[in-house]
Length: 183
Image (cartoon, rainbow, N blue to C red):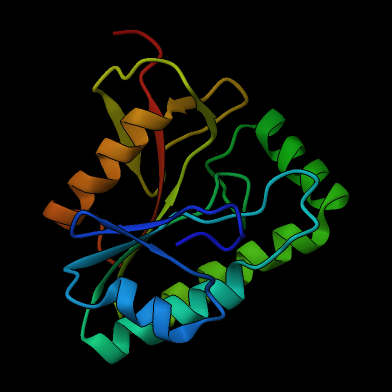
């Protein structure tokens, strides 16, 4: 379910559910009968439409109402404190935060909301996303070092998130992910 009116929606049991996160009945309909929820939302440049906390609040409430307990939420490697970021990446994170403080603040609040939800959550923090072909190899962990050259293809990230839902390897952890540079 997209937070915009672009005409897209969530695919539920082979059908598309269109709606807005402020329509709680549609959020419940989207979550109902699900074994897990992937929260893959976020603002796009110019980062003026910051909705992550409101949308995530609705998603968590719907999950609790329907009894779904597994949540995987994607934010980003530049959000929140991370001693595992390289110095240039840390500089980039500070620069981004100074340019877009509201977007960063809302993402940090989103992570705190997920962590305090009482659900079986995992926060996935990728660096730069690419449209490159999947390599099928992903590095992941709470202390994985990320830098300016770190990246992951959207396809590899999607495969990783689906695998995490099935395995639950990182339940109740913030984890960083990146693709291997060389295969």
